[in-house]
Image 1 (cartoon, rainbow, N blue to C red):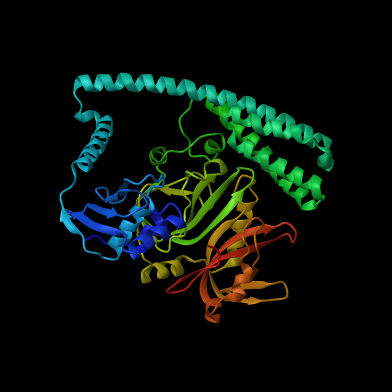
Image 2 (cartoon, rainbow, N blue to C red):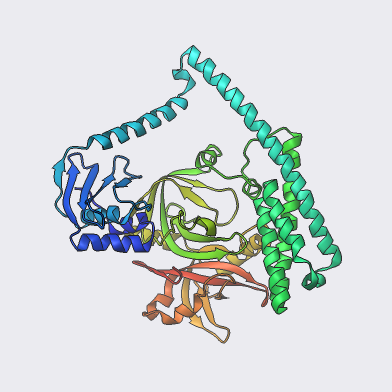
Length: 492
């Protein structure tokens, strides 16, 4: 019988309420009939519900990494609470009678197989094609390539027009002086931010929205921190305009619309497909990624929630980020991610262009529990000198186009308190002050709430290096403490 962990169930549930309700259905004996196929790929349950007839729910594991859930209930959630309840029945090792695979399931599988075969046929190597198939494929490919190129050229030219518009407004503001920010008409920036969508410029649009937020806040409370934030936004916006214009002009001059390994592609409206990143060589087969931290933030400029997972590659210790974007207007339809207390075994992980803690994505993974060797790998890859690491981090953070933090694994001798706050001492007894990055949930206070003082000695800290403009120094926000047998999360 199939092994299902509660962690896997929670990862598949669309939200906490669905997971809780599904568990209750199982615990209260909601299923009156349980069956499974002899090959263990299909599980079926008959469940009582609020309708006149019982609901029939199933879990199809013909594709191990991407199980399909079906239910006759009217819920729009996938999987629904009845499907989750069925998984809890499997988790509880209830008795499932052996049954034949229903005809409707067989037909659905056949349709899916037909789609997969069609896609496979489209990707058929030329060496296996007939002359007629090869000629037809080449003609179709040439036509599609020409249409795609014309569309990309048109888009690039439109983006150039949009950049000219943004630069004009930025120059006007800079000429007037940032001291006039309190009297700036918000309509100018509201209209500009709205127009950026017409020019396929989500990056500049987001920064214009952020600038608008800071100006609005400054006009309300005259807090100088908004003034400083506006300067940072303008600096990044100006850098993005210059680099983007150079990038686009070079593409047009060379008549080259192929994808590049650059962060500018996404900033300028591109949306990466996993296959495209793989073609650029930015992928890794059979990756083992260990989640060390997780948090949720709200981006006012984007108008969306961002679920962020922080992972380390157990093969080399690199730290990667996994993002799930949930726009306000689509909250009902986009599932919220949750913490994963385990290691993701990923058949193919792809990585986005950029420096620092780049984004990682995958399509399908098996989650296993932490093992002793995982913790040992974290200790092996942790840096031992914050003094040496600080130099490279400072250079990284100087780039206006980068993220405002750099996350590292830090082996430490001790974390203690000083007059300024909590301080980390590394293996060389060099120290660095711990703090809270603006915009992130505060975590340093939780260091004083730990139940065991040994957690603050001879362990590894997952910490985010950032530059504090007020004190003009580099600080580290603590995210998690890793011991030889546990991950203690300060942010979750």
